[in-house]
Length: 296
Image (cartoon, rainbow, N blue to C red; front, side, top):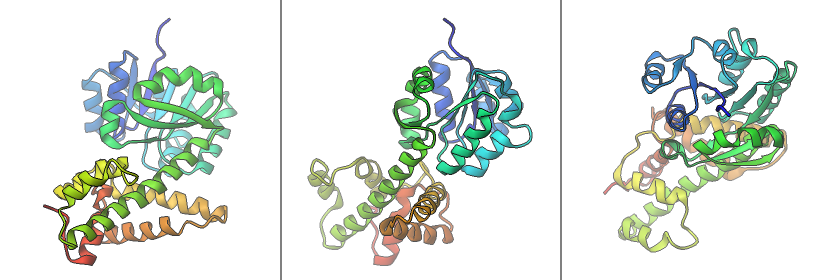
């Protein structure tokens, strides 16, 4: 049985390695991106060049988007020349962006009018795990659609169906809140250790196997110690996620004081021009406040 043809829209830091992994797994792929250099790269690696979102949708079986925010996804699907113009009954749309769950549900309703099923499947793991094909993938949608798409998603990482449409996005909001607070406390606590005169690397070795150990600690502390904030996941994108988290929490009257505090730290970094740094750059907020650097 031939593999379904995949349409991939959004060839960015995350989208490019994800699309590459789909190609490597032997799926035919048609790609589209608003930036020509990024599109040229994936075409060079074997993808067919798409001319618009609608044209990609018209020429594939499963359409995937990996875009920055809710307005970008809404435009790609419902805007002029969007996916909705190109799809026909029976196709499947998977949004792997991190957007507001209410936006996801509204898009799914519009697609359903044309007989299109949708999964929301945001990811976690950053550029490194996108390259390795080991992303955590949180999926919302119908079980039968998930099962059909699962082989494609497994090329990208570990997909888990967490509920109906929008549930994937909700799981991602939970994930991003935990990640933000975790990165902040790693910076906060290790600056305490360094200011007390203890080598942060030795503290790291001592605690990483205990209860304080985490993926955030393992991935982000080495960046802080090396002063390496090349983006795996940009601060401005985490601010976008925190905006969606806090808007959703306010709608539900659900208090999230720790998340709100980290949002203010990131806003400070944004105001200082650090929008494109990796979110491990939260350490810079603490370093400025405490007048000491974690960098070796």
